[in-house]
Length: 278
Image 1 (cartoon, rainbow, N blue to C red):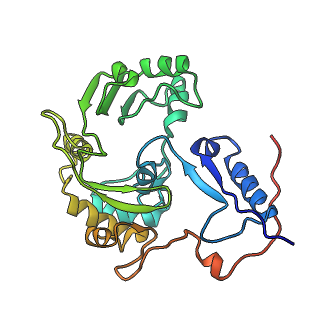
Image 2: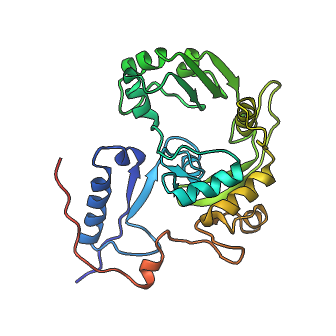
């Protein structure tokens, strides 16, 4: 029997935003298995591609309604207490609201105010532009930080000019393959513009959290102490290796090329998983 021709399915992130998102991905994996596309160094089903820079990095840092940094569940009491001890503040024990459902339920009075990052929130896959405009306009107060004036920013009560993360900020960026790389400012920020972290920490201080500190080395070491998957990723190692892939558990760990690389050493062989149609 001739070897199967190598093919790779490239996914858009929208495939994971459907109500049957898991079944979508499983169906593609089934298709890859049925056509003999099983190979470790050239995946048959690629990771979803996103339209925004560093979306993966945002998720890594806990910008998900039910996760803390390192994808640790916010409803796990032990994990939550670990962060509370370092942050000196109580963390709500229940998951928060996702961006789009948050807007969609505003009519039920689940939120009156919003803080929005520098992205366009009006054209979304789950709400019509007209409905999104109505919902955002109905907020009592909306605060936006952005590097350019968007339609969303035009609705805001307060707009704070933020640095363009790809050329005016210091920190890290994470690719869809989990590779964390150092980012350095290529050009200075214009007058009156501030870095995202400076804005967030300033807001935290005004809300009474006096321990907020935006120094990069403090944030880096804090993350490594709290997130096991980032424990071995010092800035020095990221620079030495030109970036590293998480999980990276200590200073000797090289980082995992494959998220579930153990399966290539001890593969799980079994039937494809059926999914429901529709």
